[in-house]
Length: 193
Image 1 (cartoon, rainbow, N blue to C red):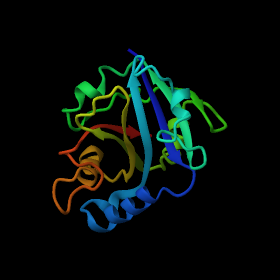
Image 2 (tube, rainbow, N blue to C red):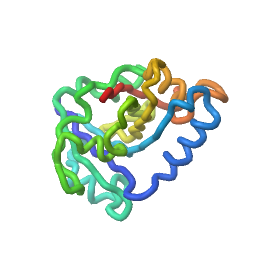
Image 3 (spheres, one colour):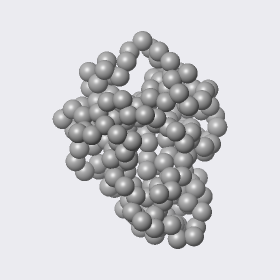
């Protein structure tokens, strides 16, 4: 089954990510390894979804605002089962092929680097990217809306997936900032360059 994904990122400064990175760096254990944090709003569906296609979603301000967002439309056949069915699996692996092949964008080039460009560009040498796709538990679908976070971490010998989990998933007052495990499902991919 084809998984279709619309990712949108801010054209200017993303104040959510800019604020979160500062808090994580200054207040959370392991924050010293966090070099950057990027965010895309994510809207994804499987098969025909609710009958709307990405072109329809781009016309709705809830999904995309051309004055403040860039967008990328992706499709993959390797998406596996719907995340709606997988929502109870917290911290499972995100399919490495996701978000899939680039189909359309408002950016100049439509290539394999589109997702990278929406998520802050190439990861610097001696760093590793950890992508966390977070979405509300109990979402009835058929369009699942959430947030794709990219944590850029120093590749300094610490396990990047464990470090990203500690920085992202809120389990105590000094651990995690981006995902509430009582409200969100999340999937994780370590993207080594």
